[in-house]
Image (cartoon, rainbow, N blue to C red):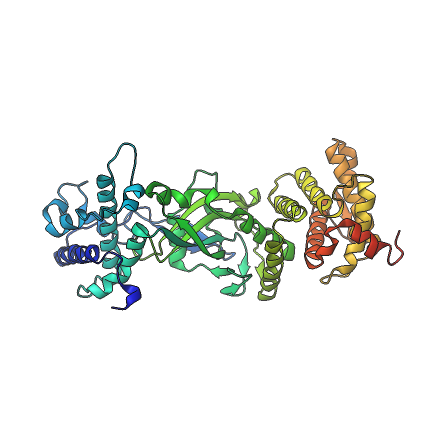
Amino acid sequence: MSETRKPVAPDLFDLAAKAVGDCFERIQEFKLAKKYIGSYTSWPEVSLFKNGMPHFHIGSISSGPTDYTQVFSRWSGEPLINPDEVPSIQAFLKYNPAPENLRDHFKTEDSSVNSIFRNQLWFFLTALIERYMHLHGEDEFSVDRLLPLYLPLEAGLFNEKLAVDIVVPISFLHFDFDDIQLDGNSGIMRMGHDFQVARALESVYDHGTNYIVLGAATHALILRDYELTNNHWIAIMSVGSNISAYPQEEIDAFFTALRTVTGYTTGYAQLILLNRGWTHKYKANIPPLEGTAVRRYPVEFESDWLREVPTVTVEEATEVGRVYGRLRGLINNNQLRIAGRRLNLCYLRQDEEDAILDATIGLESLLVAGDRNEITHKLALRMAALSTLAKDKKYNRVKVFQDIKDIYSFRSGVAHGDSKKANKKREIAINDKETVPTVKAATDYLRMALRILLEHPQFLDPGKIDEELLLADGVK
C-alpha cells in the first residue's frame, strides 16, 4: 500500500472493511437466492432530440440500477440485513475519533455530537457498500479494491479543505471537439453519459428552471482547482444548492466571451460542484457531484427546444479562451463589468425594449464614460473609429456612424414611449435588400466594441479614441 493511499484513520478503515466484507457476503447469498433487493426509482434516462440535444426523462419504476442500501430498509417488513444484529456494523458505528475539530464540525444546538456523527457514519457505510457492490459485486471481496472507494468518503469526513471543480453546462450549442483548455484553470469539456445521469439526479426545481432546457447541453464550462472549507456538516452537505457558493463573475465572464466571439444564443440552467478526491455519498456507479438549477437562459428555449443548434468550432473556442482570459485579467474594470453584464442580458431578455436599453447602456459604459454631453454623436463617432480596428470584418465607418444614430433613435422612442418613432427605426438596413432588427444590430455593435477594447485596452479611456483614432486621421 503506497504512502499516498493510506487512510487518515487506519482503525476506521479496518472497521469499514470488516463491515463491508460481512455485508458483501450476505448480499451475495441474497442474490443467489434471488431475494428482491430493490432498485432506484425515478432514475433518469438520457435520449437525444433530432437536433442532437440531450433530453432527460424518467424511466419506468424498475428501470433504475439496483439500490443496495435497500437491504437495510424496514419499509416493507423486516430488512434483509438488520444493522442491529451485525456486530461489525455496530463496531463501525461506535467509532469515536474524539478530536476537537470533529466536535465543532458536527455540533448543533439540539443534537449531541455523538448522535450526529453516528448518523454520518451510517451514511458513510451504506454509501461504501453501495459503491463496492456496483463496481466489484461480481468478484470476491478485496480490501485493496475497497480502499479507493473508502478514501474519498474519509476525506469528506476529516479533511479541512475539499477540492472541487465548477461545472456549468452550456445550453443549446454543439461543439466540434470533446475537450479544450481555455485560460489558466478553465476549459470546455464533453459530458459523458454517466455525468449526464448524475447531473439529472442533482437537479433542483425551485428556481423556475425548465427540465428540458436543463438537459439540453452536451458540453460544459469547467473551472478547476477551487476549494471548500469543511467547517460544518450542515453547510457542506447543502453547499452545492447554494447559488452564492459559485464564482458568478467568472462564469458570467465566460458567457460574455462566448457571446462576444460567436454571437450565438445560449445560456445555462445548472451549476455543479464536481467533487475531487472526496465525497459524502455514492449512487450506483455515477460520479459524485452536487448541483442546483438556475435560470440563466433565454425564455424562448422553454418553447423551442427543437430549434436548430449552431456549432462552436475549435477555432472559435480558442478565440473564446483568449477573450475570456482578457476579461478575467480585467475583471475589476467597471466599464467592462457593466458592458459584459449588459451584453449577457441582451441575450436573456424576452422584450426587445429591455434589450435595446441594455445594449445602449453597455455601449455608453465603454465609449462615453462620465461625459454625458452629446452622447449619441460622440458614441457614434467613437464606434466608427473603433470599427477600423476590427479584424474579423471590414466595416464602413460612415455606415457604422449612421447605424449608431439609428439605434439611438429607436432607443429614444422606446425610452420615451414614442411607439411611432420606435416602430420607424425597429430595423436597420444591411444593404439595399436586407434588414436586421435594430436590437440585433445594437447587440452586435456591443460585441464588437467589447472585443476590440479587450484587444486594445488603452482605448477604455474614451479620450484616447478621440486623440489617437479620430483626430489622428482627420475625422471630426
